[in-house]
Image 1 (cartoon, helix red, strand yellow):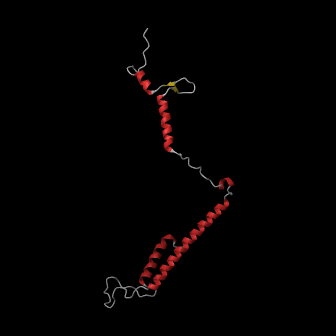
Image 2: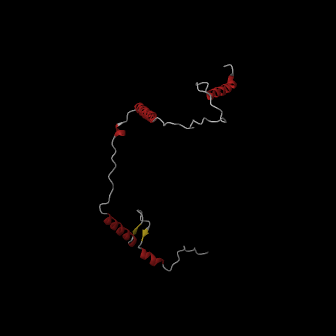
Image 3: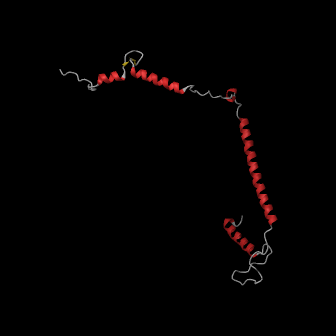
Length: 161
């Protein structure tokens, strides 16, 4: 490279100048913008676009897009298959069908709630022990209220000596 990077830009500009002048493609050079126009020149295209060629180009673009999408799908499935082949085989425990346990439904929910309410009422209205060691007892709510009405709930102060 004799000119280096500094010679590249003038070469590109010269090529663009020649291209725009028409010298490179055999056309006559364009007239300057400030000259008078030909009165016979309408200044726009006088014929329609070729519909057949446009349709062929659009079809070609669609087919190219479909080919690219199809190729990508094929490549992804091929890659996934090769990755699956590289993995060890699953054990019978891993491939066994899992069946969830059946739901634990109540046969008669109204009878269950009646039974629960009766047990709670019996605990609240009866005497019994609160623990297995029989160190704490429970008494009915009504009896507990009778014992505490009119008494202070504050612990008794030890007598001063």
